[in-house]
Length: 221
Image 1 (tube, rainbow, N blue to C red):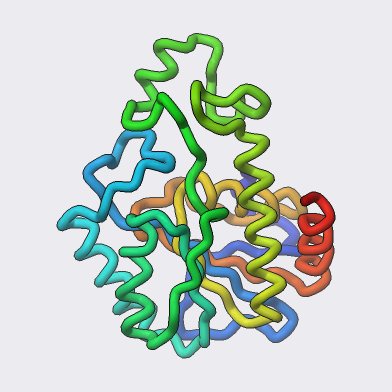
Image 2: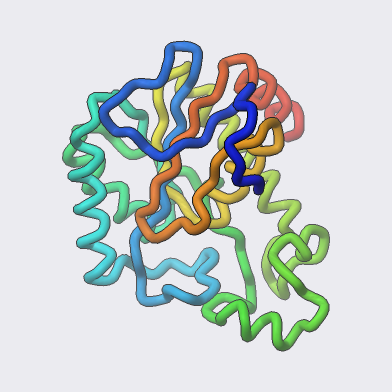
C-alpha cells in the first residue's frame, strides 16, 4: 500500500485523534487489532486462543484511551476470543454493546495454523506472501480471494447498518490490511509501517465512496 501524503480525494487514513470528530461529510471507521495471545508470531488464523496476561493489560489500556473520545461508536468485533476479549473493556467503559461478526475473522490458514511464516515459506519455495494464495489457499484453509470477498462483504453490511454513525471494528491484521488496501486503491494515503497488537487505524471515508462500495459488495454476494 502506498505511504505518501499525496492527494486525498476519496479516502483518508490518518493517525487516530480521539478528541476530534471527522467532518460531517466523512464517516469515521476505526480499525483495531486485537491484543496479544500466546500464539503471537505464528499464523493464528481461525485458531481461537484467549488473550494472555499481556494482552489483557493491552486491551484495558486501549479502552482507557478510547474512553477519552466523545465519538458515539458502533462497536463491531470478530467473534474469535482474542477480538471479543479485546472489545469487552471498550464496550464496558463506553457503555456500548458489541456486535460480533464471523465475517471479520482472520483468514483460515488450515494446516498452516500455529506455524511461523518463515517456516511455511521455507517449505513452499514458490510462496512469496499471502497474496500468492489468491486462488490456491493453504491446505485445509481458504484462498485469499475467498477471504477478501468475505471481509469486504461483511464491511459492506457494517457500513449499511451504521447509517453514517462512526464505527469501531476490533479484528485481525489480515482483515485490517485488506480493508485499508481496498480504500487505499482509490487514492494515495498514509499507512503505518507496522500495526502492533491493539494498534489503531482510523479512516474518514466520503459518503459517495461508501455508497458505491456498499452497493458493489451487496451485489457481489
